[in-house]
Image (cartoon, rainbow, N blue to C red; front, side, top):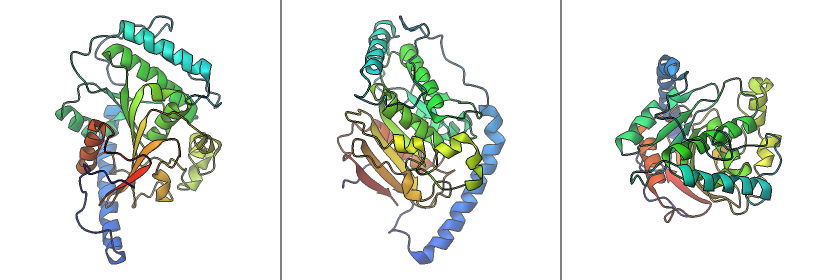
Length: 316
């Protein structure tokens, strides 16, 4: 098991002792309420889709320069569907031939994907942090709150990533997904061939193994897909040989949305994944906490040489 040496500390000291747990939980809950109140205020600013900096060039042979997803939930993961893989290779070659120059910018674009009943405004602070540290290509995707299928949202992400690659001249992107956004991105990477485009996928409080929280919300189809043992969660347990994407999953021991909290870890024998334990903050704080933002930046800058396959790291 290898620990990421570059990750900063959220709280200094040893693991939380039982005597300290209640006071830590109180502080984390208070912080969650403050963040929720602030997010309610800025939520309207993120309802409209962000403006694109320029008109994307169409990719020959695709009409709009976008990929296509099946929406059927069948096995289309890495190495399992030659026709789907060949289609993505064709898109890649076309994008290489028509993409705009990168002007020496080596960092791939970062795509930010929000969680359930949310929008791109949740990433205001993280986006500002990335821009301040030199990331030039940052894009946020709003999917409809009426979306009823993670697979459909993953297909939209597929098209969005292809457009970004064609517009920026980069052939890969990094993705940061909060909660449901991370699950959508994982489905795209693992089941729709998105590992050809996604270099690193960072997830924040994502129910990789499903969640048992908010049982009364189970009437919504997409919430049912997020439950432990759902057809979609079981689909993500299927083999994914040769998956090229590196996973970095942040999970919090005080998360009250992902239950049990350990289900926010990526646990798959075919995936190169590091699970980062965060202490002292809850679910809503993950995309806005400055120390987590610092850890995200360093994870995106890492070439993977200091990341052990299926390793674990601890942010205390």
